Amino acid sequence: DAKTTQPNSMESNEEEPVHLPCNHSTISGTDYIHWYRQLPSQGPEYVIHGLTSNVNNRMASLAIAEDRKSSTLILHRATLRDAAVYYCIPKQGAQKLVFGQGTRLTINP
Amino acid sequence: DTEVTQTPKHLVMGMTNKKSLKCEQHMGHRAMYWYKQKAKKPPELMFVYSYEKLSINESVPSRFSPECPNSSLLNLHLHALQPEDSALYLCASGDGHFGGYTFGSGTRLTVV
Image 1 (cartoon, rainbow over the protein chains, first blue to last red):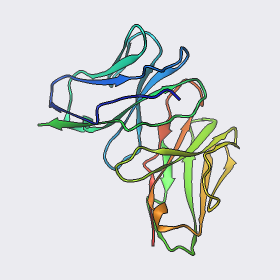
Image 2 (image 1 turned 90 degrees about the vertical axis):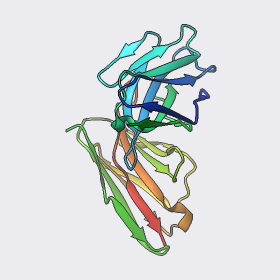
Image 3 (image 1 turned 135 degrees about the horizontal axis):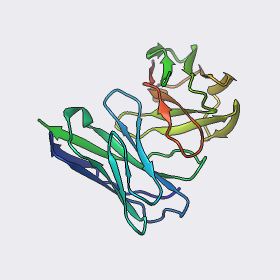
Image 4 (image 1 turned 90 degrees about the horizontal axis):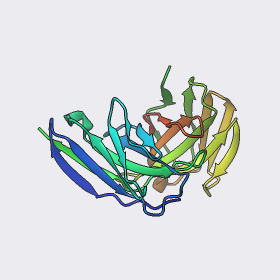
């Protein structure tokens, strides 16, 4: 499993963009980069995933470095409901989903 | 239906009790998973079922016994648990390949 490094915690303000970084320097060429988040008292929730190109969906955008050794999850306009622990997980095909420590995101009103 | 349903939501059991956790999904996913999560820690994988067969057991003690009766149901049978087994038990389902997993809200288990 590729090792990931994420900040333990980050803080942002409501209605501002948030950039959550992840380093995954040992990622293999066929690992997709998955992001999940876990809101308080809930199970993890899938956010987005990508391989090489930047990806957008209704929840977030994923920017992947050209060398794929890092990625950034972008929340374009944070709300209080985005306060959660965010996990970056490299995963290849049918391999198991292994969670690291993640980043605890706090949103200030 | 795009949910994974776990029951019960809360469970308190004694160390000599036998209980079961239940997980259900109707998304046609052929892979189902059990995770254990201690407070302030990330989820840890316990078991993986693929096409109703156990494919991964992450060296989980035998007091935890998984069962997959059909493609929609996943059970976790509990027997002779210890207080340190108290945790949030999460079930998930997925297509096992490139898509995302869908997690339930979990069963919060307390062993007394």
